[in-house]
Structures are given as structure tokens and as C-alpha cells.
Image (cartoon, rainbow, N blue to C red):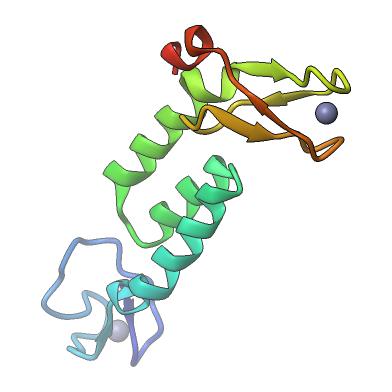
Length: 118
Ligand SMILES: [Zn+2]
Ligand SMILES: [Zn+2]
């Protein structure tokens, strides 16, 4: 939340008026939400969970930020899979049983056992 008159940042949740100048011309960060959410989706797809979490915090969606951090710290990012073609290791970031190697570009199948860990 920001006051559009005095440009002060308002920390209060859903204030009716600016606590600094009393103005009711408040700029809600929620207005930016659709674009931010689109960005977050992109970040998530790219596996940039921390950046996505920070974006959620910007629009004050704390729960979502927490959720995404869990994803980041949880199982998904800790599983690394080795390409049978070139031996390059990359983190497994989806439940797809086929992944494309970032190094050699070949597709390979993830063993069920590994997928179950996700
Ligand atoms: Zn103000
Ligand atoms: Zn490879």
C-alpha cells in the first residue's frame, strides 16, 4: 500500500486512509497483481523459486511465498538426475517422467523410483 498524495509506504493492512496525511487516495499493490502473477508463473517454470517467492512478497501474498519456498527447499530441488547420454547432472524439477538434458539436448526417462521421491 502506498499513499498517492504523500507517497508514504503504508505498512498497515487494508487501511481506510493514509495514517500520515489522512488521504484516501491509496494505491493498492493488488492493482499490479495480474502482471506480477504472470511473472511469477514464468519464474516458477524456469525453476527460479526464490525469485518467485520474493515477487509474492512484493504483492503481500505471504502464504504463497511460503509455499513456493517450501517447494524450493523441499524435495524437488534436492533431487539431481544424471543424463545417461552425457553424464551431465541436472536438478529434477517436475513430475514428468521424461526430461530433456540441458547439456546434450537428448530426452531421457526418469526411473519411477526417482519420481516417487518427488
Ligand atoms: Zn499520505
Ligand atoms: Zn546429456
